[in-house]
Amino acid sequence: MERIAERFDKMGIPRINSLIAFDKGDLFERLSLDEDIRPYLPFTRTIRNLSEARRYIRSIGNVYIKARRGRRGMQVMQVTKVKHRGYRYRHSYLGSLVRDRAEHFRDMRIVLRRYFGSRRVIIQEAIDIVKADHNRAVDFRGEVQRNGKGEIEIVAIPIRVGKRNSPISTHGEAYRFEYYLPKLFPHYSEEQIEELKNQIHDFLVKMYNSVEENYGHFGEIGVDFGVDRNGNIRLIEANAQSAKVSIGKAYDSRTVRKIYLNPLLYAKKLAKRRR
Ligand SMILES: Nc1ncnc2c1ncn2[C@@H]1O[C@H](COP(=O)(O)OP(=O)(O)O)[C@@H](O)[C@H]1O
Ligand SMILES: [Mg+2]
Image 1 (cartoon, protein in one colour):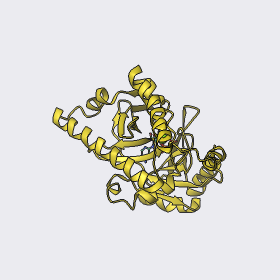
Image 2 (cartoon, helix red, strand yellow; image 1 turned 30 degrees about the horizontal axis):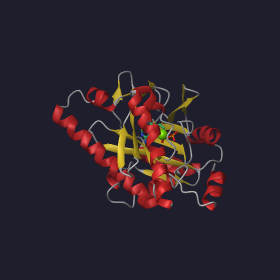
Image 3 (cartoon, protein in one colour; image 1 turned 60 degrees about the vertical axis):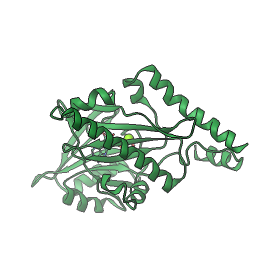
Image 4 (cartoon, protein in one colour; image 1 turned 45 degrees about the vertical axis):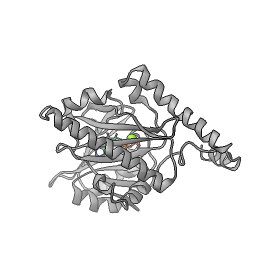
């Protein structure tokens, strides 16, 4: 992929997106320098070796460890420190939940080594995200694009609901934002729901601007984020290549059409500007 893109660059073909994929560690490092975005960031660090993980797991208590370049929840493990009883860990393997315990960090370390190999990883504080019934993880995917006029447009924000007890929302169901948000916060008034929606929209636009300031222009960005019990918005990651799976699961054909059409219209605009 990278090589094809470089080839196209040499030929002078403009890109819709400046990057093919974000490095999760690099993304959080850069965004943490942006005061607009910092309040939305869970504690995130790149670690150089697994021994360093021990310190963070013990001080934070409940973390996600992820490959800097993972996708589709395949390189994500949740690790929890249990008082006086070692560590618990969970990950998803081909859609099934794997969970177990490790008595000591040396055992945990073997598990991590086996799972991540020599990949570079980040450690991130687990967001205390709102859950659906039966301990199902819930997160959001903001699909933000530039349309044919080059304007930023929030096309859809599918809410993803994971499988029972799974640490990730991937492989579960997806629902329309407008329909499902009030179900997640049943104790909220209509005004409070509206307020939360506005905050989410603000956050997505700020994210888009900040990513562009740091990496160059984009035609589309998929923003994964969580909302905690107190209604705080927390960034999980940004995607430069969005599979749009959840859009297909949750939205009507008009939205599906739009999400595929926008990048083409935007590409056309870029091509015109060049001539
Ligand atoms: N810090 C976190 N707190 C809570 N859940 C998380 C956290 N990080 C990841 N997850 C869950 O794991 C899923 C996959 O993580 P993500 O960082 O998006 O990696 P991937 O590149 O594999 O999509 C997320 O969609 C979310 O459900
Ligand atoms: Mg993701």
